[in-house]
Length: 142
Image (tube, rainbow, N blue to C red; front, side, top):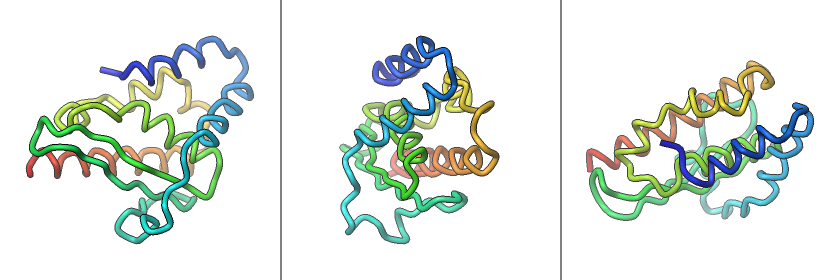
């Protein structure tokens, strides 16, 4: 169920043999993201459970299960910005009903992130995924 944008990231990761090259690529993905407006850096958008400062602000167009999901995000850590960019590629453009069905663990495992992220970063990544799923679940019920 991965988006075309996520598939491109997965193909790039397959091409990059060395984890350090992949790590640099994640950071480059984060650098390419637009910064989050300061007005959206509020407690309501802050993701709990991350070692770094992380904000995820939903952008949902439409109502109910067919509403299209996207989000803006940011972090004070470059690697985490890159992880947010990967999650953006994984989820943005799907309907909120599709978002809750995505096997994020399985899709992210294709990138080999689990073996190379610290336990704190892995926990933060899980917290971001849970936040996204929660936002989409609430939109499905709306």
